[in-house]
Picture 1 (cartoon, rainbow over the protein chains, first blue to last red):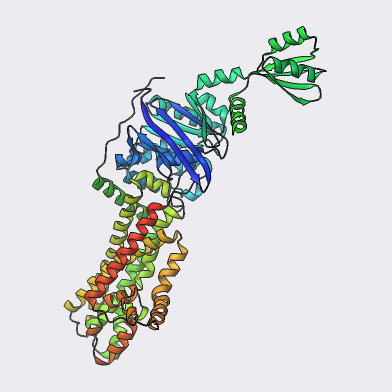
Picture 2: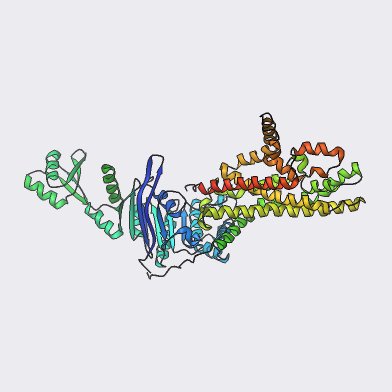
Length: 303
Length: 288
């Protein structure tokens, strides 16, 4: 049923020596939804996913449909994971590799050919894994993840190495999987892609979740972080004025500066009332990327 | 876009999960061309076993059961381990090294039910392939010997006396496959375990045994070392006649009886396989 919680990860933490790389990360994946898992390189996305799948040891718990993954006895029928293409013996041919995985999940061999067709790799079925291009390996990984027809899909940076045509295919494919009632988690640092794909977004910064909300809310919050670019001959006077009214002015060179926390109408009115001249004003709506970077910057300042 | 309902998974019992894992491991090996090339070479060499017996026949005019047993077990007396070990080494080390060294563990662990099930299946399939290959090879070797002796007009050996050594050879090769995969799990490498498994029985253990002999109170320990027990398991020195016996005893390097040697070698195998299980289950999957 759409919205039903299929995956519940709680308190995931991991340290390497004294360094805490993941700190109390919690995630919820719901049926029929695509959850975007965004963060900069090294933020801990892959570590989180590996902990959720039991590939790494750490603290915390992840329940799939109410139980730990190992209690199901057949992980491939519960969660399909795409972690950087396809992992297998380099001399295995693609069809043979997928049939091996099918045997491990008690899936009939016929499903292998059907999935190869779905991901557009029928012609590559006899290629060795070592001979697959990056894009082909990603598609092969998706076929492997779908073999057991699991209700949960987890994809770590699936767009890496894909051309724009394949990225569009992937987006439509994942939306289709969510429409079938699956819970889909997609990690990425390509935030623009998430705007078009995800229903919910979880932002990870330096091993901590700093935002987790529906995409509509994220875009709304991003809109509240509008940035005003202006040009004025007396930036110190304008900076004092802006600060007094809760904004922040940052010079960017010459007579130009950016202002956050106040919109252009308010800045123009305040400047007029204070007699501070303005040459130019421009207000831009930040992208999801600007929003994410803003959240990340705040987090860095706090810590 | 309409909303559908995803398939709800069913719980799989541990026994079924293990069966699936075994099928997964078998397909892992069966999908490799190198597996079939190796098995083909083993088959051809097994069929040629009769020729080696005929070479002995030229000197002795008759051939004893113990000579035939040594021939169909791939001459463990002179080589210190059966030559078949060098072929099974490739098949035995492959499944764990693909997981831990080549980074395919995440596929295995997310397909079969976790690390313990995966390792158990690797052991079961590895032992079966090692022992099965030895059994088929011994059978082909025996048929080849019988045919060669018949064609040469020589008398047949007492085949009932060949059965017990052949059975011990089959068990030995199964154990060898377990040692191969456990060594890879412990050392997380493929090259090092291969070198270790080749050099230790031939040189390392002999040197260790000699050095241990110098330590007061440890005289005789070399009889109980793993591959000394393994050699005593494969070669029943008591079956050799007078003048051959001291030479055979020197090559075996252990005074254990075959029944005790079987127990000791199997216990060593079980201990090392258990250590491999611990190491395999402790390892994390390689990051993508």
